[in-house]
Length: 327
Image 1 (cartoon, helix red, strand yellow):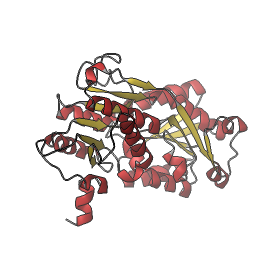
Image 2 (cartoon, rainbow, N blue to C red):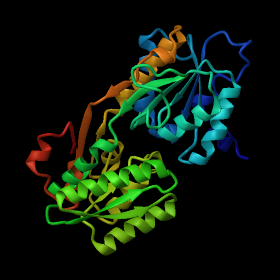
Image 3 (cartoon, one colour):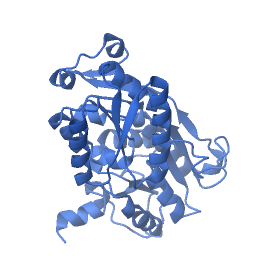
Image 4 (cartoon, rainbow, N blue to C red):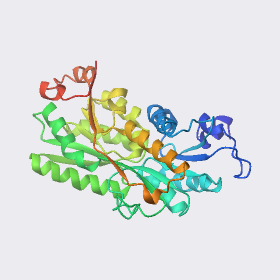
C-alpha cells in the first residue's frame, strides 16, 4: 500500500497528529471525528467546528487532540472507522452525517456522541426527546426534508416551460432515499409537476444518470442531500456543465463548483454548534442533559455565471432572495 493511501485511511494529514496513544499516556482530552466524505470538502466546516471548540476553551493541539477518520464517500467503511475511534478511548465522538452518526451509535453506548443530522433525531432513534436526549447522544438538527418543495419551486421558476424534473437519489441509503422521494413526490403533485427518479451510488451511475437526463430532456435536476453526493459534488457539477443540466443541491458546494444553485441549511454554522457542544461535554456536562439544538437558517446560493452559460435568466424574484450570487 502506498504511503498516500495509508495517510488517507487514517483520515488525511490532520489524522496523522497526534499518533494514537492510550488513555493513560494522554496529557489532553481526545476527540474523535468521523466523516462520511473527504477532508478536502470540509475546510469551512472544520474551521467552524474548531471555532465552537475554541469558544468553550479548547484549541486543537494546544489543549485538545482530534483524531479524524474519513470514509471518502464509502458508507460501508463507517462501522470499522467508528470502531477504531472507540478503541482509542476518545472522550467524545463527533458525527456530522446520518450514516456516520448511526455507525457511532452502534459502536458505543458509553462514550458521548455529538451529532449533526438533517431530520428528526427522535425518529432516527438517536435520542428519547429533543429537550431531554436521555442517553449518550445529543447535537443539532438542520432542515433537510422540509426544503424539497422549495428545490422544485426554484428550478421551475428558473425553467418555467418544463413540467418534468429529474431527482437523483442514492439507493444504498434507503432511509434518506425513501423519505426524500416521498417528500419530492408530494411536492411535485402540489406544483402540478412530474419527477423522474434516477438512482446513483457509483461514479458510473452518475455518468449514466446525466446522459439519461439529457436524452429525455428533463427540465433540471434535484440532487438528494445524501452524503455520497456531497463527496462527489465536483464531478456532479462537471457533469451538469457537460450535459447542460440546471441542477440544485442542498449545500453551497455545488454552485461553488460550477453548478447552478443550492438551497439548504447553514451547515457551517451548525458545525460550530457541534464544536460548542463537544467542548461543553469535555468541560463536564452530560449529553443526556444537553437539549438538541434545531438550526432553522436557510441559504440560497446562485451561480449567475453558470446560468448565463446555460442560457437561463434567473428571475429577479429569486436573485433578490439569494444570500450569495456567484458572478
